Image 1: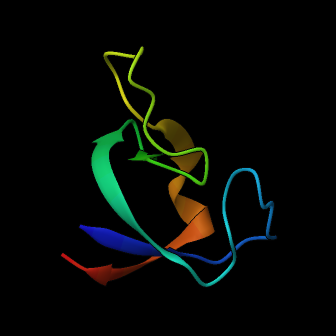
Image 2: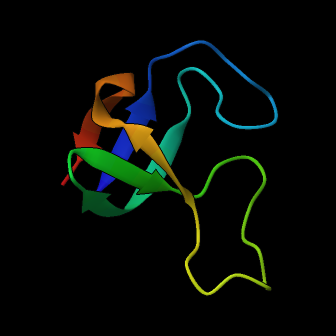
Length: 59
């Protein structure tokens, strides 16, 4: 699934209007790989963000 961020831009985390891949949905939160990118040292990638901050653009 792809979702467009519709919140306030934070260049370190998320950019308003940018489309991100949703890796998973966990208790109404979206796991997104943000502007920090992938972390080779982490088994679980991405961070959780509230779904209200996104607009679905592709299922």
